[in-house]
Image 1: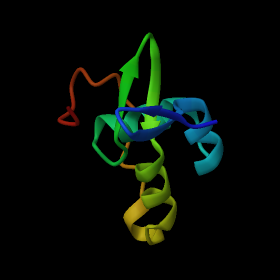
Image 2: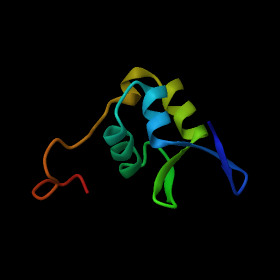
Image 3: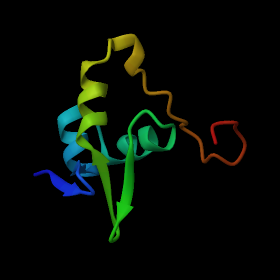
Length: 78
């Protein structure tokens, strides 16, 4: 269920993960690398509905999950 904040529609990270067929952790990593847009609101991560729709509509080669599989202590992903 979408939440409207400052005239912007958001879904929870969990709902975004369901829509995208992925996990909450991958949604958070997509937000970290700015593939998805979101914010922390009252302890809950929210993702803009627009960025979820844009990710769904993107060509498969544009949707590669370039997500670090390490602990981010020795790589250049940050």
